[in-house]
Amino acid sequence: MQPVVQSGLGWMAWTWQTALFFGVIVALLVLMTALELRRPGGAPRHGILGLTTTRGDRLFISLLASGYIHLLWLAFFGTPLWGASALSLLVAWALFRYA
Image (tube, rainbow, N blue to C red; front, side, top):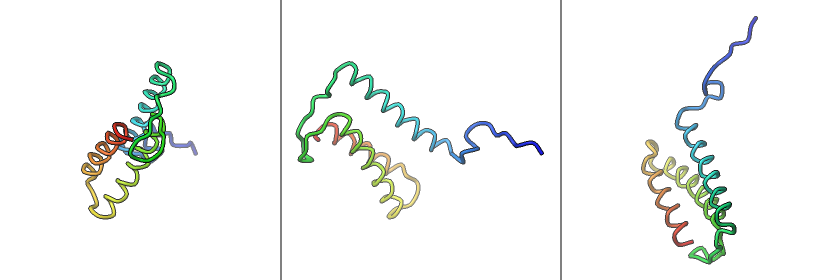
């Protein structure tokens, strides 16, 4: 019996949305690397969170917050998740601006 070969993302049971999500994270990491190479250090600052953060710290906190926002949205409102995504972008913007 020959093994079945699947093409695309089917072998991982991913949807295009899941692939897009991880693609965006990879793109953010590439962007942060480019920024770090261009301007090392990322100018640490003390913001509204009460701790000193760099660009990488703010990205990490934004990604964690996004995960929790989406989980809470699912718990209280269900699908679709466009509202949670918009709220996550707003929170990420606020963290990068004020944290």
